[in-house]
Picture: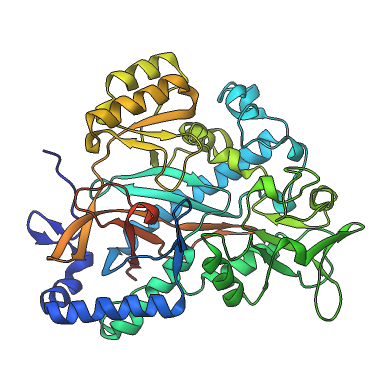
Length: 470
């Protein structure tokens, strides 16, 4: 039987960071808990915090499940995670500058050329472009799991447009509204500086042609996008315009925004649309979401795009296996955070091992996300394993496999009371002139008993994440 690390209890004793919460937990009657849970859901509904699940009939918007029991880290635990995440963000950006430039890591034989240059996320249109301040990925979301008191692993990196930070901020706001006494009794580091840090990060990578204070906008695909709430939420908190493709146009060497007072020049675009749609003259010609000619302005240094086109090659799940090597190659350091051991099905020996142990492993599509396109072997039926086997055999290069980790658990409010549920963590690292992150992140929780899949699209929920002050 697998033993999971419980972040609140160790050998029957409450761990230090959770000591203040034990009394709060024990003194909360079921009626009060249910009332507070209903209050939280009502706040989420009134604020409009929903997410969309594509492919479903009817109205796809859902209320994201919120768990009131916070997850807690000590300042020492967080300090290590912060160093590791920053290290990883620096290495990933160095890799992107390199592979769209001289490709030194490939020349040195540290990573296969085919894995990079034949990768679907590698954008040939970006080759030779060095973005402002040498930053490709300005917001790096690093998905972490814990398996023991000191054991943390990186599940994957998100270098394109990682979502979920609005939930990090709203989880804290709702907890402070509902349980103000908890925040008086505990010294919890704040996360509300994130919008200001994000705006500062974006402004810091304004192009050389920028004159004066940079004009920053958020480019959204529109209100049908699953993360539209977050786009509008961040624009409001940052005090910048939320725009769609038709709101922007290219004239000469610059990008302009249509306003009631006439065209206004735009310096930095925080884009929340995929590479394929940002410029129909360079990528998909049928795109109605982007700005024709945007890439020409980008190449000439007239605008900064955050994160830069082509950043996705760094968070490919096959490239992921080489991130520790990137840390050593570019930074001359040993990785602070470990990868999960990974088998690449494109390799014949790895493929044989995966097929022989399929019922024991977690298998993922190289470009998959949101908990889709994956197999959790120990939680799957024989028929599901057999069907997935055929998919792997048909296209081995599309899959990687990892051992089923014993994800840590935290106390979670469920219908029966309080029970342990598996969690992960996504901190958001901002990369501009500085590399920084707020003390916290998005904790996702698998609300179904025994489930290891935390994605909201697969029934997961969210929690507030506390980092205690020293």
